[in-house]
Length: 182
Image (cartoon, rainbow, N blue to C red; front, side, top):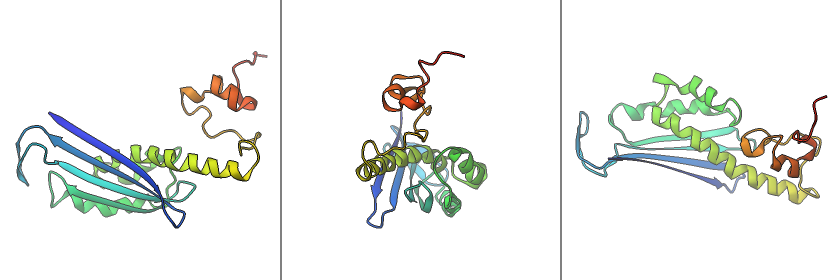
């Protein structure tokens, strides 16, 4: 009856910055009437929106482009797109969702574009972090990490728990599984 499609892609630019794009569409399997657009036929997007964040290596937002190509209210919904410039200067990381909602929550933004920023942030991390880690490891002998510095991934999810197998193998200095209380 309803299909929501979210597609996110990450690109490295020739100037060293990164473009992370998110695209969301909502379509119905049936025709229905819309107050502003008339009849929306099966497969015609009710929502067709995208956002592009340009980021630096530290995941700081340098530029934003937000576009609403289709929405229930074409004279109203696209008008909010310039508000997404409020993201410039924010860094994707801890507190990202809270900071986005402070700037673009409720009537200050678009629910669909704000929701899209979650998978866009994940895509940014998945795009940039592995490339930067490989580049660091090429410059430094071994894994490229500082054995005294806490790994960024540690305790970010179940797989990277400080008392888990991956921590034991990859970050033994930070492994907490074999320690006895004491």
